[in-house]
Image (cartoon, rainbow, N blue to C red; front, side):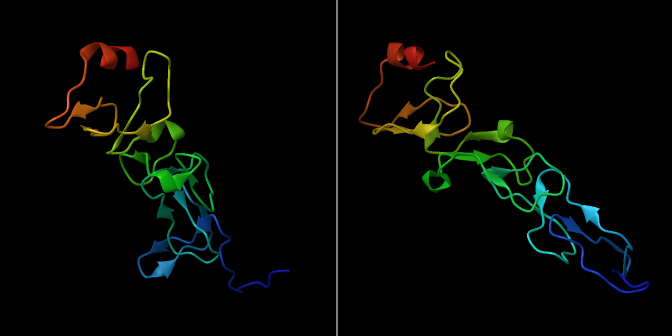
Length: 138
């Protein structure tokens, strides 16, 4: 039971905003794209690049890909609010987009450079690519 006038920490997934030098009397849920891992947080943090959260009051953010150690996906900005914000990172590309509706980034092929987002691989000096191969991938 809470005593009148007693202070309590805001729960994880929320924060207690400041108004000037004083804290507001109530807790505020973290907005979409932000999280608060611990109780008593003064401000919610934006999701890191490559992560997102679509819900209000989050305590963590989801990674764009199942194995975040691969680093094949990222987001264009901090605080992403949807998995649709996930795009290929530099060094990866979408070989089945948009022809088959593919949404899985793969590592750039040997001998090519990949700028990320929706760019197709570009041959490095000393390598070549057949235009029909790129068209089949798209």
